[in-house]
Amino acid sequence: MHQAPLFCDVAEAPDNGLAHWTHADDGTRLRIGHWKSAAPENGTILVFPGRTEYIEKYGRTVTDILKNGYSVLVIDWRGQGLADRITKDPMTGHVHRFTDYQRDVSAMIEAAADLDLPKPWYMLGHSLGACIGLRGLTEGLSVAACAFTSPMWSIKLPAVKLAAAWPLSWAAQSLGQGHVYSPGTNGSSYVLSTPFENNRLTNDPDMYQYFIRQAATLTDHQIGGPSMGWLFQTLKETSTLSRKPSPDVPCLALCGTHDEIIEPTVVQQRMARWPSGTFEQIQDAKHDLLSEVAAIRQKTVAKISQHFRDSTAFNTSLENCA
Image 1: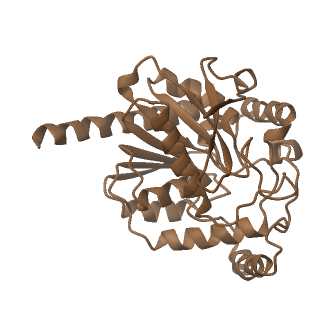
Image 2: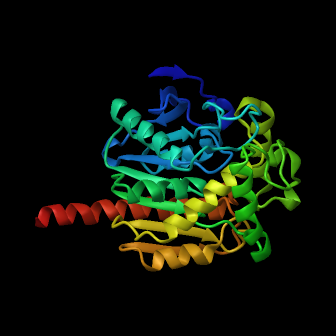
Image 3: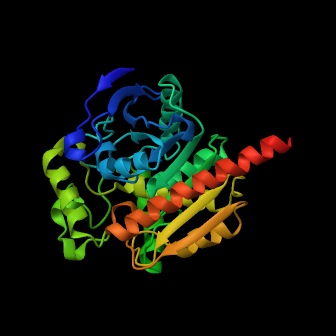
């Protein structure tokens, strides 16, 4: 791996972070960023970001995680951040096949091993990252425990629009137009084109300005709306995952009561059949719990950290009994 740029100042992240280039097995170049804790015995949290996100967006979250004693590894998925873009228009949020993200997961895990990041390893997946993470777990990805914020295990659309999205996105991909933006979207950055009052991410104006400063400064990191191909692949993936059993890994899933992007009832149904699974809705929160007002943000990080500590203690007790 070769060193890659990491903008800790813009991210407002601890300055001991490092970034590296790594490659998926199909040659796609990815970027990973990591920070090591002063308490290596607590392990490492592998952060699976959401759509449009990139390493620096998690700068403040990394600070909170390090305060709780964990090391952190974050990835730029293909088509996002400084990873290789997939379409001629670099602002298009696109993926050829949803399973391609699992190539990125494999590269991330290999990089974590090469960097000798302390174990146990935990997964924290947000939105799209939770969908990628769930697929990884069903295919044998080994972590001590996982936590998901606003898991994108469904897309929140009115019934009529959802019914139309399937044939339209399938037709676009079949006709070689999968790279075209989905209806109602374009190549503009969401935070640069959406006033705070209309945003679906956070109730915190300071955090929204934090997003805006990053988008205006880290222009090469940004993407716009999803492509028709991304939409079809995501619809197909969430449908497929809905029929798979829940993995036997300790899991915490958190959703906001005011989330307008994913469907919390689908998350609740999944968690009801998840061994060692816990579901909780955070009152008055929007989609991005890790970027909400301070009280919600602190509560979210505290619950995740406690979940990982409890999971480690439980696994240790099992090992001692064996």
